[in-house]
Image (cartoon, rainbow, N blue to C red; front, side, top):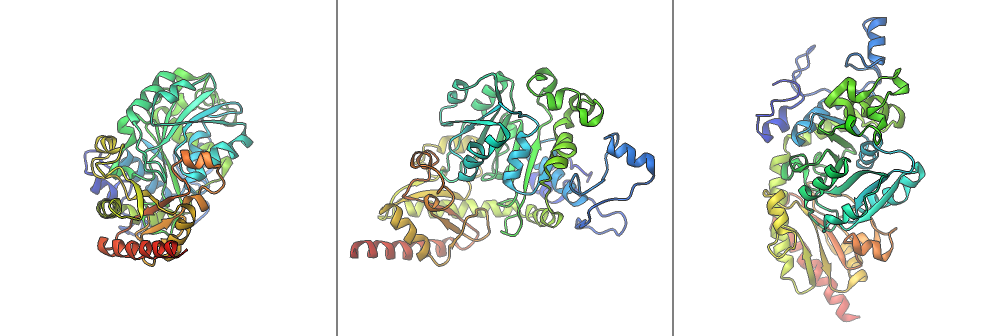
Length: 438
């Protein structure tokens, strides 16, 4: 298989082979960990051509690393893009995704149903760059159009919102972004490209926290940005001068003219990683490559287990509601069938009778579920968002994000589904008994 992988190959084949080939010196079939900082130049001319971006290659691992390069090509193949950039974390991926697009005074219009850390990052930390974020309810795509301005530089959503499980109408929002002449950025962490490829529905840029399902084992921090190569930067040069105007740091080179479909990805390595330094460790990239090999198998089990647990919770007397798009009762079920017919993922929420205090007790009472702030592990995880990931938000922001006081978030793993149900049943009974005694 070629380095980039043949797009005609099936998803499972690409998940194992895309971007990789036997190591030429030793013949090692598995991608090695290139745990080094820098690379020897052939001669002075070779060094100059690399620094001038005249030919591809490796200079310094902050910019590019051979192990990371395999991960980048594989993720680009799986998402349907032309290029990728591996970064240190999912939050770094969001910054790197927007960095070529933004400038002081510019805005990103984002869904208000996002991971709590993303709401904080965009609503507070972005202000230190002079960037602005406008948050809208994504359940009505027209809300994005209503707040567009001359300063808008991107629209941003999650394909499956964390923790609320909201699935948005990707094609409708993509159409608004095209009309506005700005990129549509989709965080695909909760769905993964196995369940949904946002690019197929109009996204221009896809970000992932590789920490979650892509690695799948809770060992490796990382993030990634994948670009379609299709956005017409030169047609909107005034909005995106970093890509469509001469770059002073590279002697007046214009990325969009010089690199064509790879302009955005080349900029991400040559400027964003160079100056922000949010590079992924090659060990983490290697572990994520191992995880990707089993991604289709794992996601099938994740989704099957999640549906079984959600169906059981829906009939439990201690539970007020269950928000899982895989249930026919979900208001997002039709969108799930349209955009994610293979399944609704494994992360969902439910409302616990007894509110905040009952939620705190439940996460302390389960035994098989691990109480921690992560998702996408092979192990099943539980969290009370109001007291953890969304704690810094106001009551109104938590409610809008689907993280109210009664909300419990589950990330269903790969265990026997009956064992997960038994653990939740025992814990829910214990919480109910204690509440009744009080």
